[in-house]
Image (tube, rainbow, N blue to C red; front, top):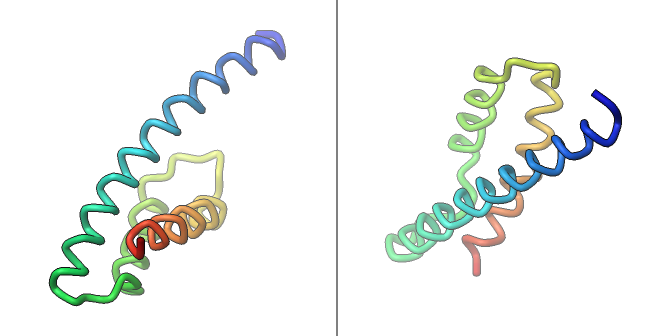
Length: 85
């Protein structure tokens, strides 16, 4: 494949990623509502650790486990902000 072909592939993958991130965000918003009702904290470090462990365990590469966790740390930051709204 040529560079343009790879870029088209990346564009399609980005569209899928954005859809999935928004699905994840919608779920996080609903969890935030439940946390607010039950007066639970938005930040749950044990849950975040479990998420990091899970995504590292299902990671086939070429990203390293550390790199996947770096991405997910940012995702979790954004999701926490949504839950606080």
